[in-house]
Length: 83
Image 1 (cartoon, rainbow, N blue to C red):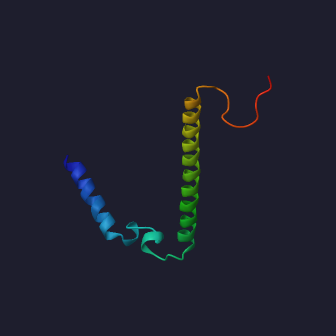
Image 2 (tube, rainbow, N blue to C red; image 1 turned 60 degrees about the vertical axis):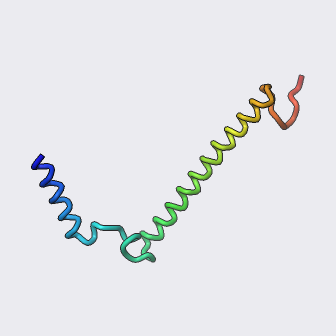
Image 3 (cartoon, rainbow, N blue to C red; image 1 turned 120 degrees about the horizontal axis):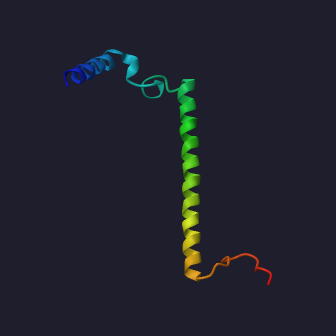
């Protein structure tokens, strides 16, 4: 217990003493730095990917509900199958 408390205190002092350990350049430094611009583009790309995946999940469930309401396995719209 005493060793854990000492390690925690030492870690807290280390982070309090080192100014660069508080934040990256995006939060704490130059907003026009290349790292900041790259991080902004990375976050934008991830938001777009998450949005596309969520739209696909919603489309799947909407399609599933519509097929459940018709009670058939046939497509709701589109060309009729050859019989």
